[in-house]
Amino acid sequence: LLTSAAHAQRPKPNYDESQVPEFKLPDPLVTQAGKKVDSAEEWNKVRRPEILELFETEVYGKSPARPENMLFEVTSVKNDALGGKAIRKEVSVYFSGKKAGPRMDLLIYLPAKATKPVPVFMGLNFYGNHTITDETDVQLNGNWMRASKEKAIVDHKATEDSRGKSSSRWPIETIIDRGYGLIAIYCGDIDPDYDDGFKNGVHALFNSKQKPAPDEWGTISAWAWGLSCALDYLETDKQIDTSKVAVIGHSRLGKTSLWAGATDPRFALVISNDSGCGGAALSRRRFGETLHVINNAFPHWFCDNFNKYIDKENDLPVDQHMLISLIAPRPVYVASAEDDQWADPKGEFLSVKYAEPVYKLLGTSGFGAKEMPAVNQPVQKQMGYHIRTGKHNVTDFDWQQYLNFADQHFQGS
Ligand code: GCU
Image (cartoon, rainbow, N blue to C red):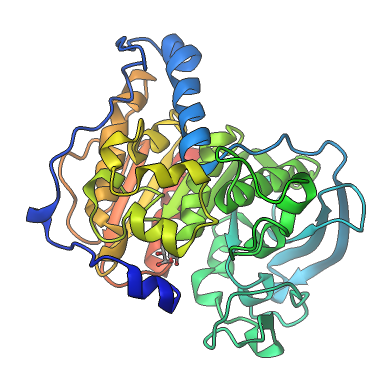
């Protein structure tokens, strides 16, 4: 997905474990002042806020407070979706409270047979809600999309042929059959995925200046902020158990689900699928994608301060294991794919491992794995991890693990 200009300038990625530089990770359990953190209280009062602030100012950028006057409009309800298995709704969220401002559309599937509020998975998608389902009567998203032949995007717009094109990544029937709901949102409703100088999406709503300050929100922060706004809507929906909302994302949107989980403790479970650099993978390993490459190819994703650490990863006051630690003690699941070396599976595993001391301090079962598990052998305690065979993608195997993990934490089985 890199532009050709970015390809030309990008340094050759390292895929050789013996070439991974030596590094020392910052300790999540030692404060900036050098004091060891040995109680949950100190973690919650001192260290966690410190780490959150560092990620806000140096990595993703600070987001504004969410608007209090958002307008929610249910635009369609179908009580016999998926052959009668599901209730399907579409809900528009107008961020400014006015129909003129930017809006995001939620596509919601809930098990029809549910007798009480249900736990749900909520995630952003790359090409519109109409791509995740084979049902042809959901709204076709009219917003700007990244170019994709495969998804039948023409002139940056979805077409009728785009319908269902991402459905293999969203096994809706399986999710429904297992008793969960699903909420999908197109990321570009919140902020279009290109470097536009922050003139569109929700950035435009808040930034009267041309561009946010170096510590203000990039696109990943905006997307995560949008997910929190969606959660604000869910809290008004009586069919949903908002104490059991799992946030899920793939790749750039997996970076986003981790950041959403870190910034909004209402997300009860957090899943990162192949999130890689700037997501679950440790930046200091410089394996596969690096800060250099990602900040050049996608200058809008992070805040400008993140550029300071290009080729200077050791100067970062944090690394991505500390992002995982911000989610503690809530269940977190990180998944990698064997052929997705670009995302550094080992670096993703190590982030979970090095966040474990925080999970232990907070009294959870932690992670347990010391070494990377074999392919297709998930590890699931309070923290979960797997590396599956295959490429950068979301597969049924991935979803089986997420559903099992959710069963364990949401249904106690
Ligand atoms: C690119 C990018 C990754 C990102 C991925 C995706 O490959 O370099 O950081 O995760 O796109 O979102 O699909």
